Amino acid sequence: MGILKKVKRRPKGMGRIYKVKNTYYLQYTDPDGVRKSAPLKDGNDEKVTNYRDAEEAAKVFLEYHKKIHEIDTREEFLKKKAELKKLRARLTITLDNAFDLHLAKPHVRNANGNVLKVTRRYWEDFVCFLKDNYRFKTLDEVDRAHAEAYIAHIRQNGRWNTKIAYVKANCPVRRKFKSYDSGGALSNTTLNRYHSTCKAVFSYLLPDLGYTVEENPFYFIPPLKLKPENREIFTDEELGLIFANPPEMIRGLFTIGICTGLRLSDVATLRWSEIELFDAKQRNPDFLHREIVRLTIKTKSWVKVPIEAELNDFLRKQYKISRKNEYIMPEAADLYWHHRGVLNTRIQGYLNSLGIVTQKRIPGRKKAQSIKGFHSLRHCFCYYAGLNNVPLPVVKSIVGHFSYAMTEHYQKHADKKARIQGVSLMKGIIGSFNKAQTYDQLRQQINEYVNMAPDPVIDKIHAAILRIAGDTAEEPQNDETGYLIENKQ
Image 1 (spheres, rainbow, N blue to C red):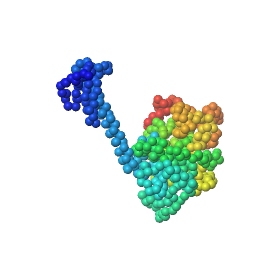
Image 2: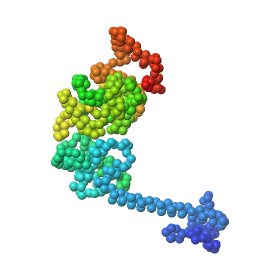
Image 3: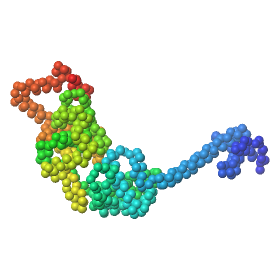
Image 4: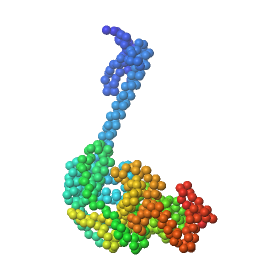
């Protein structure tokens, strides 16, 4: 056995270097207070042969183990911190504040106020079920058995809380109101919305509770297969009745609706400024082949809808009436923002007055199913577009649909020129209802009219052609998109 060589004392915490035979060792104390020894080696994992190299090797060794200890300490700290965070989440995420907390998380797209009101009521019904049956207060108390019990109940009996009560804050001016019970079977669509709302709240808050996606109480509950009563389109005869002699506001709403496929919320609140190249200083603008560019209220998606002949005629007439107002249909916009129920009632009342059946009774359900209404115009737009061979990507681009069946790249392929050409195939949708005309037919019709027209009319046609061609004395100019810009007066 070799003789232990004594060396000078090193600074506190740096250990002690000693040599046995031809090997240098470092004696040190680990963070747990245990004294240990380790052979010293250089960067090539070879034994050091002199004290100076041993000093350098000892320094590297101690620094390495210090970093390892710091990492272990930090991991332990983070682990404890995570446990405390989960415990805090379990105590702070209650059933009453869970819905608001899940709204604060980043979503794919933000729902509008009306949708949030409805989904909040779905969640509140689930919370009422938990409190009445289990006396729960926090979200982490809910497990799969409770979720299954709730879904089973609403599928068999309808919502849990059937009490309909008057909330003064929501409707301060109202006649005397008595609370009452309402119930009955819910449609498969509505039941799936209850299910998806509850599932979404847990999905967004599970990480805060320290759970995985599979631990969502609603994760393994399959949704119901949908058997919806499809909304019907208006027949040619019904469209004839609708446009025969409607009130002015109804005429405007239905004209814009059937020519654009926009929803009632977007039609009623359509602004002049949302028409491409709109200039409020123009006295007699022409909107033909311009586009309505709008961010839709319901889906928050951008749509671009070309303006064709019939919609252009209406807009030019309406411009003389409401050009000083922000909205194209000021009366409809006011009703939508302040008395939405009145606007819907007027529309449905007008349709009912024409003898058009707008609702259908569904066996086992208290509430009648709406089958015809303003939204049917959106279906008409898509239906007539299909009959006239307007490409599906073009229709999807115009109406702004989002579905799994229509993929995203279809929407991107439809450019402005394609949209204009596509909607051009739908001429006559109001006047003749599906008696579309091609450009060759239009040219033939114009030629026949010119051949039969008297001289004064020929003069007017000639003047119009000169104006369109840009040969008038005022020399109107075209912008880079090719649209006519009238000279400002």
